[in-house]
Image (cartoon, rainbow, N blue to C red; front, side, top):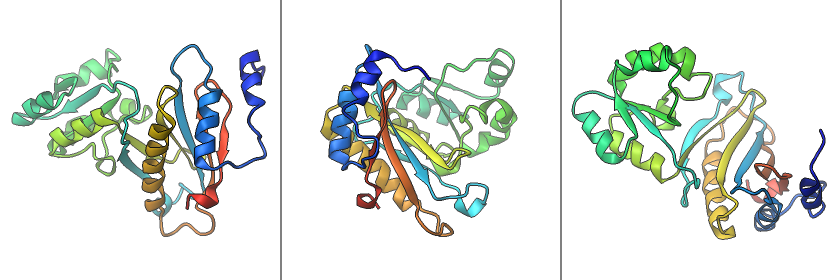
Length: 230
């Protein structure tokens, strides 16, 4: 893959063979964010889990202390007074069965997170084929299937992110923007790592955290010393 001049310049300051302390890694990642837009800083956590086994799956959510720096659009499926509660909490879209054809037939996806009350999951389940592949299906483990829609919406708006294993047993999540201070990024990263370490499945044998890398959207990744995290 051909890399741009700017990427190659920033890559020179990062030693690919080195595993950095968190503070130094964050400092380097900020230096490596040289795009003309405010890049997202992502954490890529390679685990020792085997997600093919149900007892080694990881899925959860954590509220980042300083948010993600991104405006998140929330859709809530609910009934009666829960619709009003969701709207009052700041949900961008609220509704019920009438939204199904809009999503299914018209391809409407102007939302980033879907929350549903348990009594609406029969309806939302019909969207499994379209929401599932996009990672938008509400899930109790992520706190997006709940009767407390007020808390769910407020947490998401405050910077709640969901983490889970992909097919390669890696977790990919944003921890902020390049414009954040090093302290803000460090706080967010620590909150994420605390949650992921706590979520370690008991069935995992050997190393749980195989590698942790921080990377800006357009720049090179920086490896973190996992021995100082676990």
